[in-house]
Length: 357
Ligand code: AMP
Ligand code: MG
Image (cartoon, rainbow, N blue to C red; front, side, top):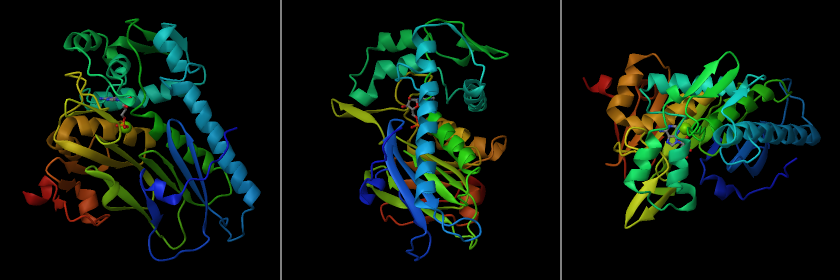
């Protein structure tokens, strides 16, 4: 069992900050902070049950420990880096796997659905390219020929699912669930938490937040959205009452070479870090894995294509786009219900096209 390490609150702001909306500073929550899943994790649980009875500290701590154990199990399933994980084995050692629990298949299913609906902007088969770019360890920039070679082994057609069997058509194809895993894990934590006595709260894994339960007073959570130009600051607040938020940004992981920034979100067409004119995308959805995969996809697609997808309505989501011209574009749903509050003078909000036309 992982030990829960308290962090100073200010470091939370580096991830995404959240507070209860309004001025009530109460002893309402039990907070647990720890590092896992390659990111900073925060669990925030209401300290009273649905009948207003205090929940024991021991119960809250055990629940947090159970969440850490669930995350550990998901890491053993999905991680591309963990040498003991199933994906690690599928990427390097075996060409076929029977997923009797169906868990891997369910992640793959969401990943493939989002991939298809975004014309491949989200692509879970970029594992080899992600390793080649080595962004987390500082590069260096690969040779063009290496990128071209790697691209030959990407594409969802290279991994085939029949029943509960996952088979690689191309043995050099590698899965990378870095763009969906945290959102999936957030969703799994909320599923577990709905079986506990804790009536409401939230979980935060890196740029992924899931809000559960309903507070009696209908109070929402105020989530700080990071400023891509100064990730220790924010551009404003999103008011979130339920569902999932996932943020993808070029400031999250990157390295610089010859004055150029190379970030971790790859355009599956070029094999290079996506240059779509966006600095970040925050996506809200009722499905955690979908919110995560979508935020990555929308970042790659750029504002115009992303808004087309929104207006098409096949996928239901809301989003905040931050452009490299310091503009903020909100989808209609966020615009209409005033869920976003701009607090940073360096940015301007533009209406979604539907409002302008
Ligand atoms: P996120 O921070 O959720 O946008 O996910 C970025 C991570 O997903 C990267 O660190 C890679 O592991 C992986 N990734 C990068 N580009 C893509 C892409 N176009 N489609 C799917 N996964 C990607
Ligand atoms: Mg993502």
